Length: 218
Image (cartoon, rainbow, N blue to C red; front, side):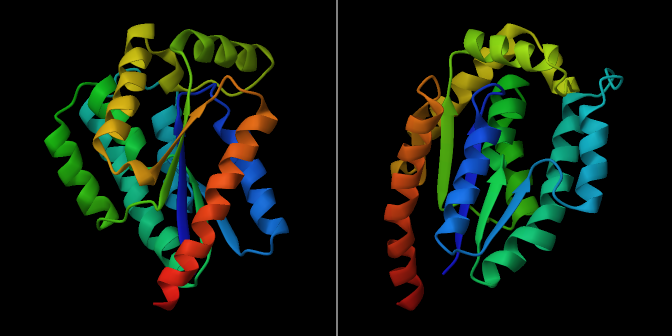
């Protein structure tokens, strides 16, 4: 049995918290899991992540940004995600292709058809079994992110965009979910308590596990 789960949402929605809680829950159940992230997840990808997040790289064009994300993803898919899925493990990834469509497609307003073609090439068509999207009003997300930064948390180049950019990103996520297979998405209200969100995620994943097991035996 293998399962590929991705987490999506604006910064401040609680992705990292819920990602870690689900990983711990699955480990307690005895499942073999691999946790990774985008951009990064490999030695090469981590170097690309540094370039993408460097706040001094203000001259980076939207097209260069898009290609760097695709390069990191191509390395991650071939070096980490596919090999661990082939071993029957559960792979959890903090962001995946929907981030590119939301941030570079809707946020940067790049041509979606070109993004889809590039993404198809980078991933060899690999899609998640489940996309967990933590939805949050843009103003709330920005407030939460500002508090994290005030407490000494990381600030990167992608945190320096205008509010209108993040609104386009959120609208993009909602449009992507509406246009995709609804069984692939779990839409979560990120304003709920950490415990309530975690329970909802676990319930959905635990329903999915036996279905995938039977699929693997078929």
